[in-house]
Every structure is written in structure tokens, then in C-alpha cells.
Image 1 (spheres, rainbow, N blue to C red):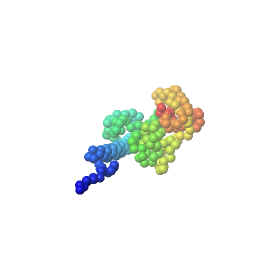
Image 2 (cartoon, one colour; image 1 turned 60 degrees about the horizontal axis):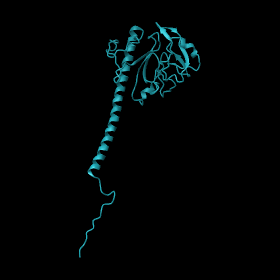
Image 3 (cartoon, rainbow, N blue to C red; image 1 turned 45 degrees about the vertical axis):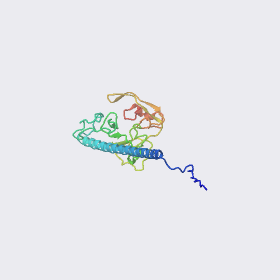
Image 4 (cartoon, one colour; image 1 turned 135 degrees about the horizontal axis):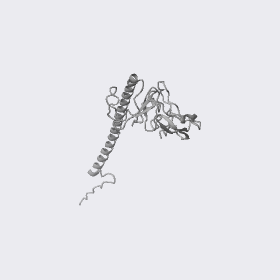
Length: 237
């Protein structure tokens, strides 16, 4: 009598993994791990840049205050225009610029005709979740009131406050508070020559003054007559 051996065939799904399948899985895991590392690496780079920006603005503000003590006025509006320049020496050896874009930081005096009143120096932080943005009264997206690009500003002789934004911690009161936004009307720039308004600006319904970088918005359609002055109420664009 002959016995016939019967071998069970592997059922579907029980064959096990082939070498090719294992290689594909390992490759996918490696790609996902690499993506995760790249994302975190970019975040670390952005935070490092932001730390540099904060240090730069702090040094600029300190040098401005020392300059004011000697000259009873703050530096000229163009002082931050040359990266690496010595315009602020001996108060600051070199003019710092944004570590990523290599562009100058924003210098915004409170008055169009004088740099002696007060000012803000602004940067663009990449990490919108940085709590220092809101602590200063700014908004990560809408900025500090001078266009949406600038979302981190340090003030000298005034207070930085983002329009329509209520920070959890109130900034320390200073000499000149920033005007708040009250409504959709704002000043469009006129013509200024030698620090004087030769052609008056106009009061327009801009909808969202913060979006257009207007230092102040008004509920009144005549903007309370401030568009005819050069006090810095005009929109940036």
C-alpha cells in the first residue's frame, strides 16, 4: 500500500513577508522619520532666527536710548538702512539686519516730522506661536499696526499695541500710547514736502485699517480732520 503525502498549501495571507516587502516598509519608515526630523529642524532654525531678531531689536532699542541721552532726540529715520554699517557707533558697533532675509529692521518714528518723540523697531518672527508676540500687544498675523509683515515691535517712549487686540498681559504704560482702531475709516496719504503737508490726505472707508497698515482707524467719515496733518495717521499702503 502506498501512502500519498499531502502537503497543506499556505492559505492566502499566511505566506509571510517577502524581502522586497520588508525593504519597502523599512524605506517608508525611514522617509517618515526623515520628514519628521526635517520639520523639527526647520522649527528649530526658525526659533533660532527669532531669538537673534529679539536680541537685535533689544540692542537697537538700548542704543537708541543711549543716543537720546546724548542728543535729546532719537537717530535719523535712515539709520537702520545699511546692514553692518557704523551709523550708530559708538552706541552700537554694527547695524544688525534680519538674519534670514538680510533686510533692515523697520524703524517707525511716532511723528513724520520728528524722531524725537518716540519710535518702534520691528521684526517679523517666524514662529507665530511665540507668546512674546501677544505679550507685547501684537497679533501674529495682523502685526502691530504697521502692516501684517511686522508682528514683533519694541517701543521707545511709547507703547506697542496691535489694533483691536487685547493681550493677556497689559504692557507697561509709557509716555505716548498708540491710538486704537475705532472703525473702518482711515487716512490715505497726501503729499508731504520738507516735513509739511502740501496736499491733504483723504479719509476713506478702508474696511480693515489694520490690514492696510494704518496707525489708526476712525468711526467718523471725516477721520476727525487728522488726514490734513502730518502726525503719522496715514495708512502704509
